[in-house]
Image (cartoon, rainbow, N blue to C red; front, side, top):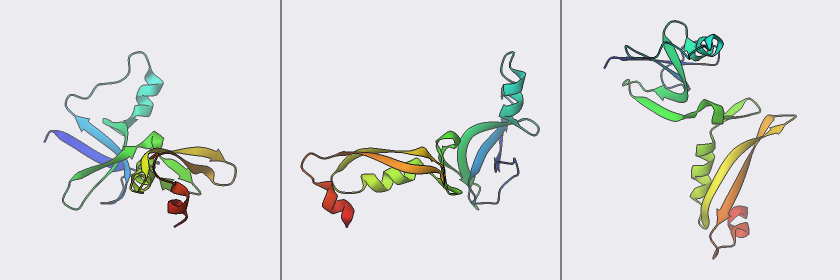
Length: 132
């Protein structure tokens, strides 16, 4: 209640239900802008009074909002948006992986490629596990 949301694409157009986009919100208590930074203020607001949060999410058919991640963390590889946390979830499910971090590295052909750094369990040889 008392909060209006829009989910928008990179061009600022509202996306369809279930489609991931940037979460934009409006409330009666939203700030009016950054102090003495008019350019940043203009960039931070969607048409009207909707603040661009920098968060990605989607709204389902029941009106529930789902958070997906931060817009700046998305890796764009070959025109496909890859969410680091999705990669990390899969890698962490591999037996012997203690922790990991996924990130994008610039690539001349694809824009970015995904790299993953893994911390492995001392008792596990990951090479045969990964080859499966």
